[in-house]
Length: 357
Image (tube, rainbow, N blue to C red; front, side, top):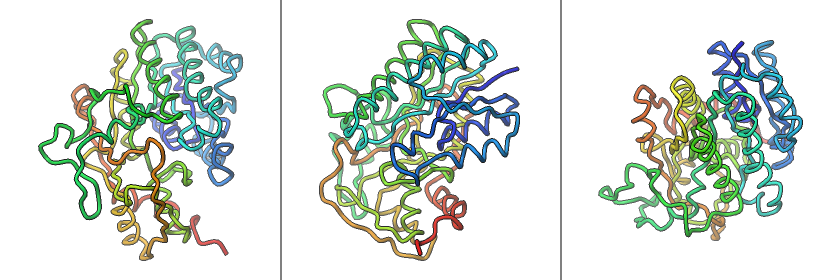
């Protein structure tokens, strides 16, 4: 019996990973205690997604509603499955800058200590299993904001001859810049994953994602850019823009493309691998450009409010380079771009995201 253990199994990437690895013939054990509801309120709960996984996959999926901070409970799960665990996919996290400021202890305990708990259990119970960790581009802090951008009509942009024009690579420094409390906790987790790979010769890979998105996103204002844009348009909510004239740029990668990268690592793991993973130049948009696309899909204008002050540590522009990952895994191909992603989010939620009566 080969087991894939997925943390954050009710979330966007976690649930996609559950389906994907179950489809490969593995038994999947999901760990998720729906802390997203605690972070962002009832509308962000992932309980519905867990119920759907159980209904779709039957005995191929086993759910464990434990907290990653509970070392004893986590150790029991790892001890039970032991060396049957063939891969560990760690997607669970506290994902919000704003929330981290309100409760830095919980943010650090979930993001950094929770990751350490997972790594140590792999070391003790299934050391040959690859560990795939969802890091974030926020480990670079606000360093990307120091790049020489030009203001265009709908976006900020780099000149075509700039070394990072085709995407920021992993050589960007993470030092001497502002990270936010959330960014700092993710740096700690990121470095610990690398260290377990190098120090204990474990198979670890981490992905510093940009905007990870897809139709299973429990969209909320503090987390879930593209899904929340579409939700606001469909439910006739006001979307609040924070700073940079709404011209900030994000790359966006669909959850399907993310988990296909996970599979590539699972089949050919490396030690202490570090990759940026995002939409790159293939799939990116500014906030204003995303509004226009949403309006074209629904036929309804966005309702927006502009707040001049940007969020602390927020990026003016982020387009990540996938070149390092593609060099190691040349068979991996990106499928989705931003218009495809927004259209799919719309179609998946057209009966659910309706204006309040």
